[in-house]
Image (cartoon, rainbow, N blue to C red; front, side):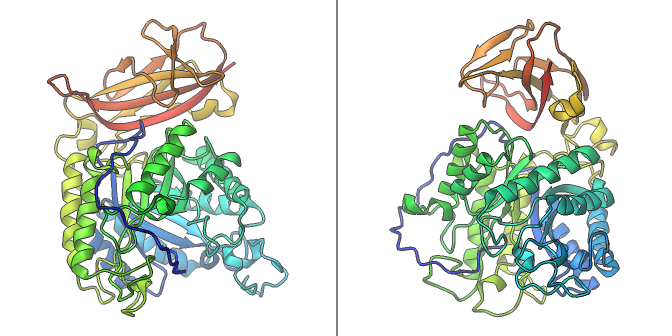
Length: 516
């Protein structure tokens, strides 16, 4: 959620003009996941949970973002799980599944018995509680958190849109230590656990409060690269219109400029993982003048969300490359008109709709017409009804991943891989294109050409797509004689357009392998 601490930033506002950002190579034409944040365990009754999921379905969302409070799920010790908590989470997931909604789980909040907080675990009571603020401290052993994620993935595997590693670790309120290495270790532990159990479930890392490129640089220095499938950010623009820019010193706190800075950082590190916006919104509180968490009117909330989501379907807008977006949030957290945290909902606390509900519903409908119907790498749960124009496999409910490389990633378990296989759900006229690039020393790369020879390429981040694979099941046989080393394999589905215009990229996935 948005940070609670107000900050006074004396920044001169720049004229509200759009900027064209550096579009990462992994961008799609419009977000694949169009989601909204809901709760199951913040005092909601079972009836409220059911009503919220039903409302999300009416909103036109195809995904939900749900926080899982680790301290509540395993309060007394590892594996000692609260039955009531699981019952409530089961209810939400089952209801989401019935509507064809996928669930992005965000486990957060270290129980005292697992916390690295001073005095833990000796200060815990019989229920595992007792150390102040222990929930905001990293776990002493990242394997404890990874085991929790493994349990959740095993329980809900086919219903998941992904698993997000923690929440806003660049804020002290959620991550009490400034040590980015501790968070990187958590990401590596989770990625390894999920990769072995369910490689089709995306591991989403970063979960940055604002476009904090300095913290992201520290994560890369700590070894996060290659251990996540998507990078997520909580992108807000305070109480300003989505097009409004700020003085460059405050880029982290802006929507357009912040996402531009993240895109540049990803490109500098040759990262090809997609960018997910897992929080974006405006609150309707009475707070004004702080330049942080300022409120807007209900009509402004509706207008700003409509315009911001419209930008996501337009690549020329500046943020049209985000692979997924989640609006924060479905229902108000409370009913205090002066508290910004209580005003972000599309629905009021009593369930009545603000103007923003209809605005987001219309925006989601427009995005759905431009984006693939299937969620990325989210298992085999078919949508409630086949989307128009999808391939035969999708219409029959046999598969829901638009594109998937099924060969183990990263040369799993030291295997010598010479043949890669994958599946795709193709609409009429679409095709799968493949690129194989060898990571070489220096800044250059070498790309596999049509004749099986490695050709020099200037940039690793934008491989040339020279191979076409036919059909919804495809195989890439690597020619013998390729030199040893690390290779990056990128697959994408494209829809050609006439008139000499570039093809539309509908979905993209990558895998790494090592030839020895």
